[in-house]
Image (cartoon, rainbow, N blue to C red; front, side, top):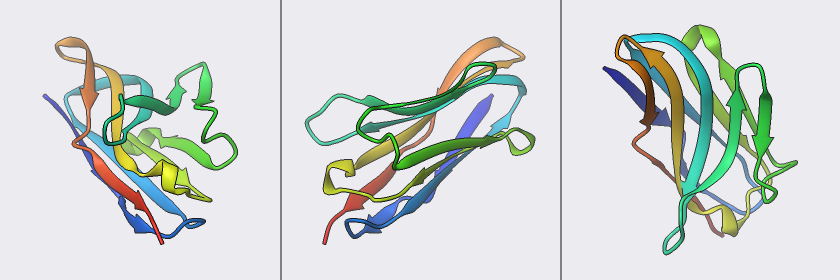
Length: 119
């Protein structure tokens, strides 16, 4: 069984910064893709940023130049550094990991982290 534990959400003023973390644990053989999604009230969940082994990173146009995704392979952890935050960034942020475990390929979601940007 694989679990993801997120941390780092909170309330921040416009222009501020937050860093989200998501650590994977359990029966993990290898991780090939890690990403962050977000879902604002009344809207569909959308991809914010992804980092894939051998491919690199990709970002939603709305966050390019402000958000940075990174990963620590030794810790099975993915990070999302969010700078110059805007009220439009307010949402629940979910990490997502594609990996191989003893059961084969699985896709796992984190529990969600609330990010609120408001003055």
